[in-house]
Image 1 (cartoon, rainbow, N blue to C red):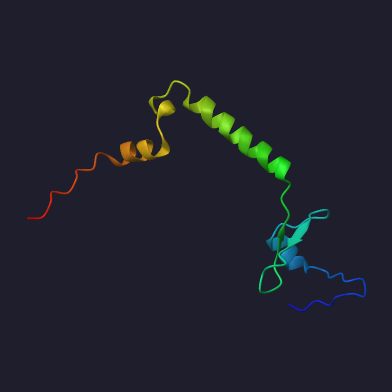
Image 2 (cartoon, helix red, strand yellow):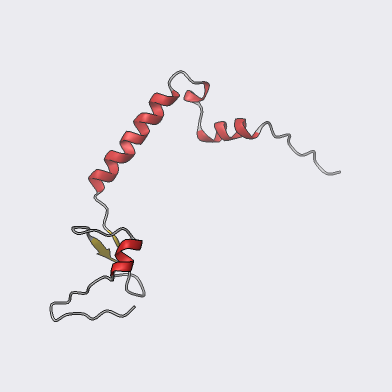
Length: 92
């Protein structure tokens, strides 16, 4: 797709791309100055992101309350789900 930069440095993002990437009026894009080519991505509101992650952690904590996995690490839970692994016997 080809777009033209206006005298004010503006471009129009084609509708098909706006739909594909769910871009809406008011969304902000962040350009990566260090990229070897023109790169833009949706800007993320750090406060909103932290709030979402905090809510997810709270829900996970509540769901695990009283469960045997409550005090285990993720690695311990995965080991338990995979079943016991027998250590390999040394080769003679």
